[in-house]
Amino acid sequence: MGTALNLTFIVLLVVTALLAVLARDLLAAVIIFSAYSLIMALMWQRLQAPDLALTEAAVGAGVTTVLFVVAIFKTRRREEEEE
Amino acid sequence: MRLFHNYHYIASMLLFCIGLYTVIVRRNIIKKLIGLNIMETSVFLFLISLGYLDGGIAPIGIGGADPSRMVNPLPQALILTGIVVAVSVTALALALVILLYRQYGTLDVDRLFRDEETGGEEGEEKGETA
Image (cartoon, rainbow over all chains, first blue to last red; front, side):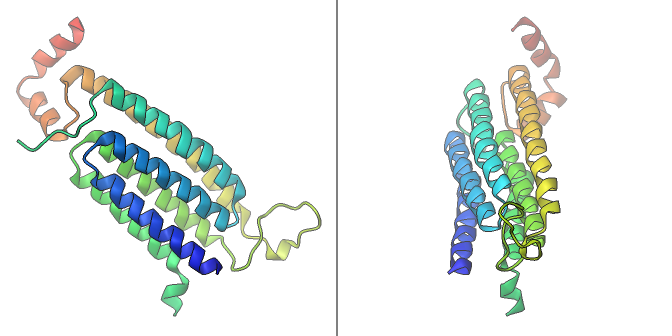
């Protein structure tokens, strides 16, 4: 049971990391990366590190996402195409 | 099945490779930063799973918890610092990215290098007037 839950989280982590890397829209990539951070917080609760889970959920999924979104709105949203 | 028993390490290596691919291959700087964050969390996952025990409990000594069943608290204290450092690195890098965009008008690494070789003076003038 516990191993199956951990394996589910790991598969979700790899899938969300790949989606965040392959997304063309930078805002979509950042939102998917926020989901990745939340799954990582759950993973740390599974690894018996509740302080890390709290920190990751607040800082990783919260502050980092806000910083990325502000930076994207100050620059440009689309990735530039190949010439 | 010893390989399957170490599935946390395999997962962290997979995530590290995904992040490394992004940092090296992708040309957009913000995408590179996302890859850097993925690499950081994969290293954190590796270190935390080094200190993990099967069937262990969280290292909180309240209520007469058995210390011999607790997971190792030392990597957790280390990684708590590491998460904060990762966020400050991301904030500094994003501030530099915004400055680069104001100077050169692009986030593409290839175009940035090309502008530096050919039209760097124009970019500087544009940045001063802006």
